[in-house]
Image 1 (cartoon, rainbow, N blue to C red):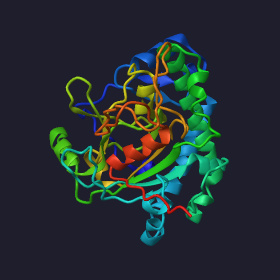
Image 2 (cartoon, rainbow, N blue to C red):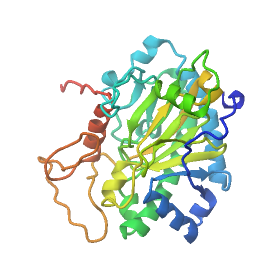
Image 3 (cartoon, one colour):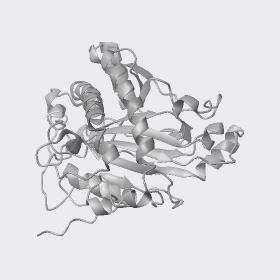
Image 4 (tube, helix red, strand yellow):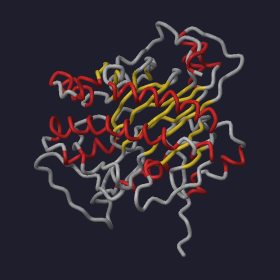
Length: 362
C-alpha cells in the first residue's frame, strides 16, 4: 500500500525536471498556465498536474486511491482466472496482460515483469456497439467507481486537448474534442498495473541503484499510442529519456499529483508540433524496490474511426485506406495515406509484444 511504502530516495540523479500545473488554473483558462502547458508539450511532453486545487481533482484523487484496492484484489486472483482473459483470448487490448513479454522497442530484448488489467472505457460506460468482456466479479462490482474515474480523467484530458487545439494547431477546440468523444468507441481505457517487489534488495548508492534497476524491466521503453495519458503512481520506477542527453531520468512521484504526458496520436494531429516523450518503468529505486509496485492509468485515445492526420490550420491530407501512412514510430512503416486510430493502436501494441488473435468470423 502507498501509505507504508518506504520513502523515495533523496538526491537521486538524474531526475527529470518536470513542471507543475494547477488543475484549478487549467480549468479557469488561465493564460499563463496555458502558455506553460504549451511550452511543456513542445519540449518533452510530461508534467505534474496538481489535483488538490479543484474539487474535480480532489474527487479524482479519492477515486484513484479507492481503485488501488481493486488493483490489489485483481492481481491476486487465481492465475487461471487471469489467464482466461489475456488479450489473445479477448481478441482485444482489453483484459489481462501477464509479465514476460519481449518488446521490439527494448534494445536488450528483456522480458518485462509488469502485469496489466486493461478495462475499456466503452465497457465501463456501456457505450453502444461495445463488445463487452466478462471481467472477474471483483472488477465488475467496482464499475461505479471505474465510471467516476473514467469520466473525471477523460474530462482532464479534454481540457488539455482544448488548449493544444487553440494554441498549437490554430483551430477550434471542437476539432480535437470531436475526435475524442467519451460516448464513441475508442481505445480509451483504465489500466491497473502491478510489478513484484524484490526481496533482499536494499538501498543502494544512486548509480548502483540505477544499474540494478535497469536489470529489472517492468515496462519496455516506448512512447504512448494515444493523445493524453494520466498516471497515478505511488512508488518510483518511471524514467523519461532526456531530449538532449538521451539519458534515462528518474521521475519522482508527488503525492496528490497525476503525471500527464502526450502520446503519438497528438504528435500526428499537431503535424509534429508537440512531443511524445519516450519512457519506461524499471524497478523502484532504493528501499522501495522491496515493495510491490501498483499504478493506475487512464489513456485518452482518438475514436476508432478517426484518421491520424495533421489537423493544423491549412494542412492538406490525402486519405487512402488501402495505402497507409509513411509513419516511422518504433518500426512502423507503411505507404502513403493515413492510419485509422483502431489500426494504429493494434499495430503499436504488437511492437510491445502484445499480439491479438482476431476472432473467427461467423
